Image (cartoon, rainbow, N blue to C red; front, side):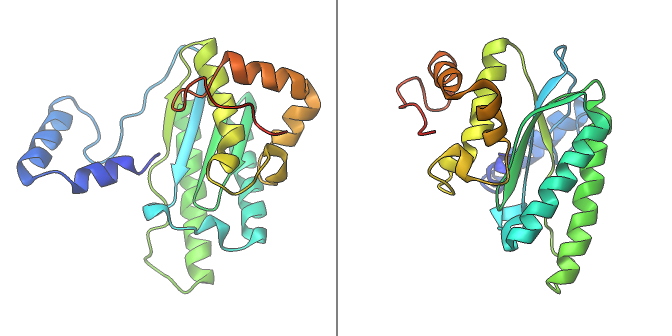
Length: 206
């Protein structure tokens, strides 16, 4: 997740922090955020989380739905295609194709700034940090793409928000099932297992 680096940083000694910052300085990397790269395929898994994993997006169903639409509108502005997406109460993922990843990241930054301002005003929490940095992971192969595609669609089930992909309303799982069918999804699940959990998982209930 996008905020794992924050938790690693907190566990470092002062000497380890100084060494990490010096490495980033000498390699001209951002000091306190992950570097951003372009990949040859132009296909990226985009991820962003609420700071400290607080459930700010999911405060109400209306906010979830509005943010999903805003996320898709921002993505369409900078992307050729959106293959998969899911919005959860405290983070989101999109799998997209773009030749302008820096523009996409800038657009996501503006979206985060706008929603932070709106949500903090609604909750009388001016000054609260809502978002952590967006990160992008370039797809290196077909296997990498399909495993990431399935990971996005499975995310609500993984985190316990739904028992089936299509039961979660803030994603495109139902659209995928309608387009390619349950049989094909099950085949993909076996052929391209989600890497973190291995090939022994049972097929998702669809």
